[in-house]
Image 1 (tube, rainbow over the protein chains, first blue to last red):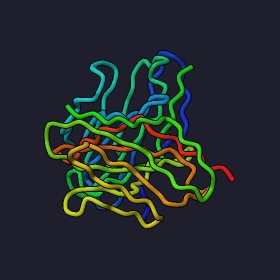
Image 2 (spheres, rainbow over the protein chains, first blue to last red):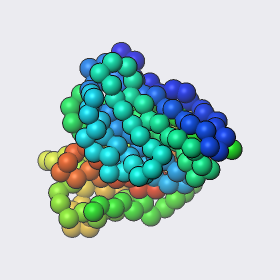
Image 3 (cartoon, each protein chain N blue to C red):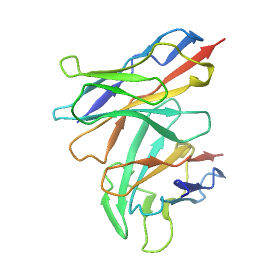
Image 4 (spheres, one colour):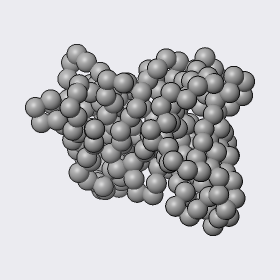
Length: 113
Length: 113
């Protein structure tokens, strides 16, 4: 049973490009959470999704960021028109039930040049 | 709103020495408390958690943490550290929603031979 799979592990984008980060939850997990870790900071909650639904997006920046978790396929965190300040590690976690049995992926490290 | 304060950003110790990583939190509601460990370029792994019951919780690799409600603390301790314990340690708190974790900024534990 593979863990939470995130890809790519490293992503380099030029300012103004789009970044797409993927997260495949553990088998049997239908709850997905995205967190962002800025340099020398702790992880900050961004969004909580269940299949096809956004439950809580209170941590998402108002512009340029969006997330989805379709019925089929991985969850996607999309950042449009990236800026240098978006450079961070983005972690996804999944759980079988709301908030229970959280498992984190290894993260995607986004660098904006 | 909740917050987590990890008082030490870096803790260098010698192998086989005891260590304590401090964590204080603030919350207006009952909380669940967690310690996560992050090895270089990896995701977060749950080390131990306090949900209810005994205030002293232990992990399988010799770490323990004690929930102190009056001091709003959840310090992590190990009586004798190994080189392999070198990592970043994050304290986190979750409120009654049980899905949104608030993390501290982390403590880098470096174990030297």
